[in-house]
Amino acid sequence: MQLSKRITHLTGGGSDGWDVFYRARAMIAAGEEVTELTIGEHDIRTHASILNAMHGAAAGGHTGYAMVPGTDTLRRTVAQRMTERTGVPTGPENVLITPGGQSALFAAHHAVCDEGDTALYIDPYYATYPGTIRGVGAFPKAVITRPEDAFKPQRSALDQVATGARSLLINTPNNPTGVVYDLETLETISEACKAHDLWLISDEVYDTQVWDGSHISPRGLPDMADRTLVVGSMSKSHAMTGSRCGWLVGPAQAIDHLITLATHTTYGVPGYIQDAAVFAMEQGSALEAEIAAPFRRRRDLAQSILAAQNTIGLIPSQGAMYLMLDIRATGLSGEDFANALLDRHRIAVMPGESFGRAAAGHIRVAMTIDDQAFAAALETLCAFASAAAKKTA
Ligand code: PMP
Image (cartoon, rainbow, N blue to C red; front, side, top):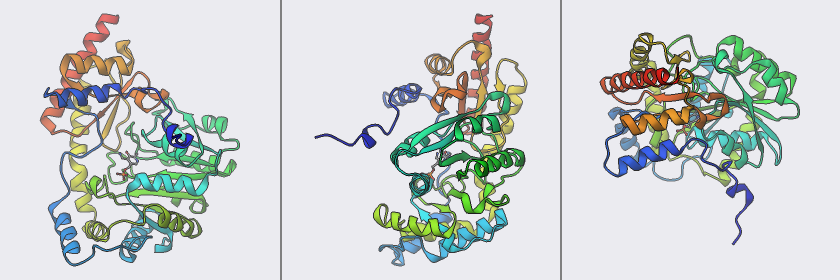
């Protein structure tokens, strides 16, 4: 039987540089020891106090269908958090609770794109972005950025592709680059959105992981709240990736329609998970800082290791759990570098090419293993790069 084009064409086809990742996973499955610096998942598990709250809520009976838009308490908690962080008065009517940020990304595009519309995203990008856009029947179009600009979008690149588009998807702090957009960049983006009448979909799932500068949500910029949908999540801020709890914040009218979408797709998020999310957020920023601390420490370690060599360039590492390394001086592509590093040293990193064409000649390193092993792997990686560069010279 024939399947829909929408589902069979969800990904663009081709390997797109994911071969290295699958090869590393196959080696691990075959019993080989591989140092994995690939995936954006904490090396700690969800805090015991959050699990206790979850268990308490479930044991207390919150196991039936929960309210589809989210529980009143969680919607209020998220709204208050948004108000505090953006200065834009936000109420529960502006919040839809979703099964993770990924589901919110899908819902956001569903809300603003019709079949065949163009939806913009910034290249390099988080792996699911183009497929999410295709999933709602829209056409993904990349805004190309340059390493020289720390992969921050420039007005000329936005103008080049924005005519006729419906939306622009951005992500700060950024996966895969680790860059945090400054006010100037966000102002450029918001000006472009107004000039081209675009919805802005702002993926802020790493908003608690900022090492330099501070996180700014474009929802708080002048006249942006009416055209911005913010994607948030408990996954990264509270090490709750498996709990699948996120949200979308936006204009009440959009959220109203999105509640109807949720009724016909997810039917909400389990009540005991939402209660645990409320508990987690009530612990305040101290718990968030505790969860972010290992990545900050490893970022500092990486900066000192990289300062002692001159083959690899570090894209300003300002937030999120990744480093983006410029390995062009080795003469290798990101994919060749990652394959050779895996073969010779059993260290797995992601080729920049996995995240789009703008990050060719780069690799992404996830800072998701313990400090000592992380530092040792990075030292080996640097020595490997330096030897490769000498060979090309
Ligand atoms: N956006 C970005 C940039 C991500 O890196 C991730 C997860 N890796 C997500 C969204 C989705 O996260 P979740 O669905 O777990 O909230």
